[in-house]
Structure formats: C-alpha cells, structure tokens
Image (cartoon, rainbow, N blue to C red; front, side, top):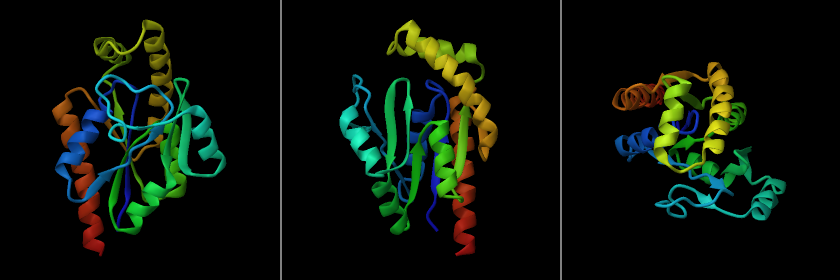
Amino acid sequence: MARLYVVSGPSGVGKSTIAHAILDKFKDSIIYSISMTTRHIREGEIEGREYIFTTVAEFEKLISEGAFIEHAKVHDNYYGTLRSQIESALAKGINVLLDIDTKGAQNIKKNYHDAVLIFIAPPSTDELRQRLLKRHTDSVEVIEKRIHNAIQEIEMSSTYDYIVKNIDLEQAVGECEGIIEDHMNNASARA
C-alpha cells in the first residue's frame, strides 16, 4: 500500500539534505512531491526541481479551485502541495515524500491517516541560528523571524509520529531511512 511520508522542521535544520538522502536510498519505491511556492527562486535552484514557482495571483486562484491538499503562508510566501500530484502517485501505488511545514503536515494527517510524520529538530535554537547565518541567503531580520517561527514549529513536534534530532547529519539520515524502511517492510508484510 502506498503512503505519504512527511518530513518537517524549522528552516535550516537540514530537511532538504535529509529528504535527498531518503530519495537516493529509496529511488525505486518513493518519489518526491514538489511543492508550489510564491517565493523567489534562489541561486542554484531549478524550476520544477526544488519547487514549482508561481505568482501570488495564480496561487490564490488555485486555492479557490481547491487544487491543494495543504497550503500555508510561511515567511510571507505561499507554499502548497498539489492534490493532483499526490492522488496520481498514490493511485499508481507509489510512495510519496513531502518536505512541508508543521501546519501542512497536520492537514496531511487529517486527510491521510496512515501518513508517517517525521519532525527534524535542531540541536538548539542557537545552533539553528548559526546554520542560517552560514547559508548567507537571508538578512539578519529574516533569520530572526525564522528563529521565532522555529520555536513555534518545535512546539508542534509532539504531534508527529517521530522526532529526529539533527545533531549529526549522517545519524539523522540513518534514523529517517530506518523509519521509512520499517513502514515499507510492514506494509509489504501485510500485503
């Protein structure tokens, strides 16, 4: 049975790196859900690889049409998961990995009860601040806003099925891969 696997956590915690490692390991059995966003494309990003980039007007039109299974406004930008993308994969028996925020994860769990939610936690908010500063992608004001939001996201982590603290990236990747592997093995044992 195909299922959704959700990875969430504060900005800068290593979600994308962990998600890419999961996709490499399970390349034959899981695909990545590419979210749509209204934020500007960053250097090195490619349209359709990291995100589907769109305008606020187009995003709001899609919201009104019910095109998203979850969407939220985060850091003044919209992010959302297209319903058509998820339903198509699940109908074909394909597992899907989503890298989304805590609000989106809660919406996924409401609509897909067997979704597996994994929260990636930073070692501390101070360490998270240092990671964000090292990225050199945001101003100090934006980083402080992200830290404020991170505290709220960490408080939501208790609603997740699993919490993986990213102190050591390799260990965090291994923990996440183990969680997914256990669920895939249990699903095939029941089939």
